[in-house]
Amino acid sequence: MTANVKAVAVIQGDNPSSDVSGIVRFTQEKENAPTIIEIDIKGLKRGDHGFHVHEFGDNTDGCTSAGAHFNPFNKQHGAPQDENRHLGDLGNITASTDGTVKTKITDNQLTLIGPHKVIGRTIVVHADKDDLGKGGNELSPITGNSGDRVGCGVIGLTH
Image 1: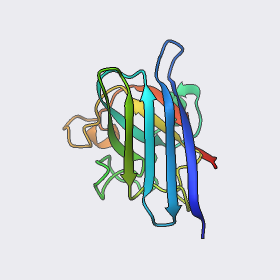
Image 2 (image 1 turned 120 degrees about the vertical axis):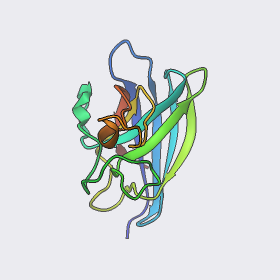
Image 3 (image 1 turned 180 degrees about the horizontal axis):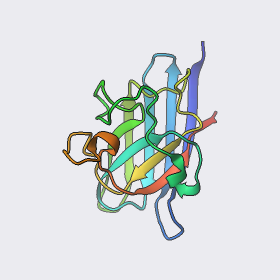
């Protein structure tokens, strides 16, 4: 059994004029344990921003290359506490008045271990608030209507 797996993503803005940057750290102590996600990002506009794991670890064309939300079970977009959600749906992070986010998320579905692990995929910060699939917009059940991708980074193993 694999124990205490750690991963990290270095967040960069989606274009050269973007100030979005930061570090996202992931830790899972053992299989079937929750994953702890520590977020330290700056350069965002004040307020809520959708925060998701996307399917590919490809940023060759900026954050667009990361593909759709990581959704191996073909579910609708939802809130982190919903049973019916993409595996990569992590809800919102909230930037303070100075554009920084320093927070921690505990997620019971996201994993660093096993066939649906997120290592090698991309974590994406969106421009707008994620409506958690409940906004009634045509994009709600797909993306949470969370807008453009303003920053991203590939999730890689660390020590």
